[in-house]
Amino acid sequence: MTAVQPVSDTRDVGSTASGGGAVETHPVRRRRRRRLTGASFVPWLFLLPAALIFLVFKFIPMAEGIRLSLFEVRPFLGDIFVGFKNYATILQDEKFLTASWHTLVLAGGQTLGAMLIGFFLALLLEGHAKSLWFVRSAVFLPVVAATAVIGEIWRLFFYPAPEGFLNEIISWVGLGPWEYIHDTDTSLVSVMFVGIWKHAPYDMVLILAGLAGIDRQQYEAAAIDGASTPQRIWNVTLPALRPVVTILLTLAAIRGLRVFTEVYVLTGGGPAGSTDVWMTRVYTTAFEQSEAGLASAGSVLLFLVTLILTVSVQWYRRRKEAR
Amino acid sequence: MSVNSSRFDSAIGWSTRPDAWVGKGIRVVLSGLAVILFCGPLLVIFSGAFDHNPDPTQLSVIPDHPSLINFHVAGENKIWHYLANSLVIAGGALLLQLAVSVFAAYALARKKFRGQAIALLVILATMMLPEEVIAIPLSLVIGDLPLVHVSLKGTLLGVILPLGAWGFSIFVMTEFMREIPAELEEAAKVDGAGELRLFAQIILPLCRPALGVIAVFGFNMIWEQYLLPLIVAADPSDYTLTVALLALRSDDQVGTGIVLAGALLALVPSLIVYLSLQKSFLRGITTGAIKG
Image 1 (cartoon, each protein chain N blue to C red):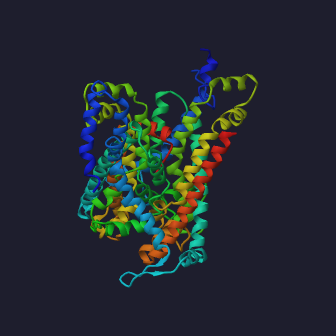
Image 2 (cartoon, rainbow over the protein chains, first blue to last red; image 1 turned 120 degrees about the horizontal axis):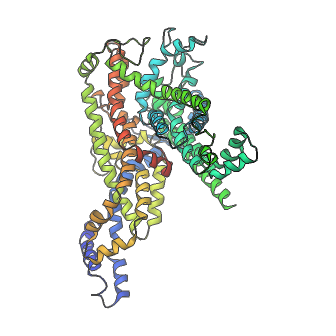
């Protein structure tokens, strides 16, 4: 209802602004008038679409989620307030506890694995040559392909029979046959592997940017001092990459905690729950068991963990920079 | 200028001398392996999609019996319908996202107003709020929009609208618009340009590089969506192509080749966008350093 008024004001401001200072006799008074009437509305008008979308599709659902987490949700019967009972249920639920353990293992493994591979790729492909640029572009493709597509192709590679694609390859070096995502012992590692494959090239690009920022003279100085290549990388390159690594670790850890699509398309949490992660658990609770209250509590818990992680990393970085 | 200075163009110290063929050979072999490892699987999608009845145990990079039969059968399984869903969502949500980001960034970067810091903070908060976390209540909100009480369940709009504003795009755009010199604006104001003309004719054309960045990131983010279309869908005919892949695979009547044909159709748009806006993409990663 207030949104109607500013429209006329906008036009007003447009004309006074376009009139310039020449017409105005009291510049001080004019400035005050602008602040009070028109100009302060204009920015909000430009922000309105974003604000509306965020309000309806982010903040209201968030508030609704927190509210639901305190209720036993019974469609058509009316919800019952249960306080923190849902949280207690989840924190004692065997399946949720297993899922949180899987989530941590998966997030940790993927983060470190992708960074390590990304680092080697960056070392291998650093340089200005056109051919290197070509290889880098090609290697980057898994990042842009949708996770669902990647899940389908890797499911085929993981075909459990001895004639399966990957089993064929590992048999050349005398390994296998394995059952990958179909075996409770190897399923989580297989999912982790696909995640590393998809995210390593992304890390590579960031690490390459970090490498590009290193002063070439430091390498030269190290070489003159008689440092070997590994020594140079350990003493010059790695310390210089520390800021990049911090960013990567934070982003990847947060991404890892809320992993859903990879697991959902590859295994659906199976076999026998061996790859069930927090979000697949929440999804099952919400949409297959129709326990919206419990599922909301699970979501809120995940949000809190993500928030604590983000804020503490920020705080740690600030403190370090301040020093 | 010396041989040394070019040798230290990389951390490893790859030699640039033409006679250093051992190092060069190692690098070529390793690069080749990397390309096979990271591109090979995607090539297999291509060959499998065009192969008549590919066997999951006999995957190859070149189809054994080239044919278009998979696409034909996939068409009978409504694959074009799913693709259309995906494309409409991607197009609609991307346009909305671009417009919303540009508007918001204009206010945040070019104006000074009370509450500006809070507005920025709120947008930052949306970025720390993973979409997975709000999925369940969001599905309820989409089923019954606040105030207007309209259900978007089972509509493409139900997927498009929540994707219409993205904190990352707003931030990238804001950062970029801050760099535009104020003199340009003042000169235009003196010439009598109003607020909208100032925005459309002075600021917007200068933002083209940043538009490329947020377009390619936005597309990627939208195409990657899985949980959102899944929870908005009222029945399987509302699925996007990526979500439909799983349903296709679970159908015993549908062979590997048909699933791969679907996967290929879901892969090609991302490839086209990436390859045509590659520079924007890489610039976005290194400047924004934020994903998802």
